[in-house]
Image 1 (tube, rainbow, N blue to C red):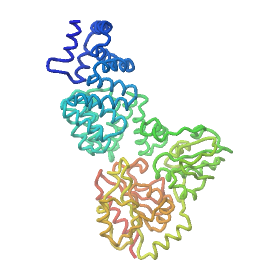
Image 2 (cartoon, rainbow, N blue to C red):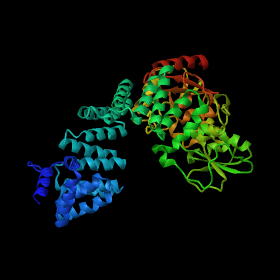
Image 3 (cartoon, helix red, strand yellow):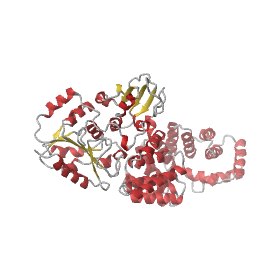
Image 4 (cartoon, rainbow, N blue to C red):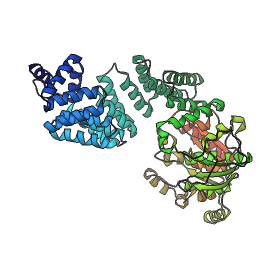
Length: 570
């Protein structure tokens, strides 16, 4: 028993209890013979809480979570306020995918000893896994207050801040993690992600390079490096090729790495390499981000191989409203193959797409589905039809406004006093690239020449834009009248021109065949390709691109000049 007492003193220390991680580190170094003797001692005194605790730690380290739970529960039964055993039990519960039980354990550990840092850290991890970023951040900060040198707490705090788009704060936390563990690749890579989100692309690239230097097999760092290189190479073909090389490296290191395939697909599509890009685009269904929208159908997926003659096929939207508007054009091609086409889209699009050629039925997502022989997501149709830049279907008009609503909007807008220009300057704030593609109304107004009848079609005006819009009574605010896409189509039809950022408005207006000028941020979305002012998807679209990220001046100056040339004032 003296040897066992010495072991317990080793993990307890003369200065009082150690942190949970320090205990794990010490017992992790004990040889197998020591564990054998400890097990013998536990058999001799089976109700000793400390014996059960240490054996539970051993089981936890060996990946035997269920065994760890049993042993740690015995330890806690003997010592109900054993905070380190509660912490270990929480880890075991988390490993068994029992987050609520894990949270309860960590909370009890904090209650019994609020000075320990690691119960806060592990509870933060559980909250992070549940997507509860704000409380996770609070716990990580509590852990850091108690253990300032706990690198993983700084690292995970940075990850949670990145999730919430607080990139500058994330950079600060992750920089501290790098200081604490300069020879570990993970914090360097995570710092790169935060720098990338903050728009500091070259610094992000440096972090990814450092991570790869420390760990040449780090596939995630190679993939992220590709993203930074791609955005830095917006106007540099050679750098874009280097980005593709990074994606290839990531795939070589991790052949089932869905994010690298996805990023490579988007890069190829943006360069116009549709032959390879559409096939890789199917990797989207392997991505964790797509898990919430994956659906299981009773019928097989159709990607162009089987005959559709006398068959019924369900075409279904999968992502944004703009995507559904862009790719619903393929319904006519599917019908020409002899199929009965059922189109399922967001409820807000059902009325609008009633004018689309091809579907026999347009239904709202969430309603009952008819019996079908095949199904196909809308964004898989280009692959099914092997679409290239030269074979994009129906690049002219393929949607039409409802005639009755068109009359109503003619009455609502009244006689035209000057060329009528619709304006949309911001998109969905929840979009991951909203901070780059939307712009303040004040910025747009500075470039709009006088002599035009401007109509705001901005449905949701942000608080930061309200005063600027109110200060311009010459701009008619019609956004609140746009109750659905049928109303919006009729409103767009009443414009001589729509000026919009990259939102569903751009797709709708162009699908109606209306002159549509799209303000495109750099780097742009893949669908607008590279270095082009036109789009193979829409004959009536014209693109005004940022030349450098964040700089709208050149694009807006060109737009203002084009407005006066192409739409002369009366």
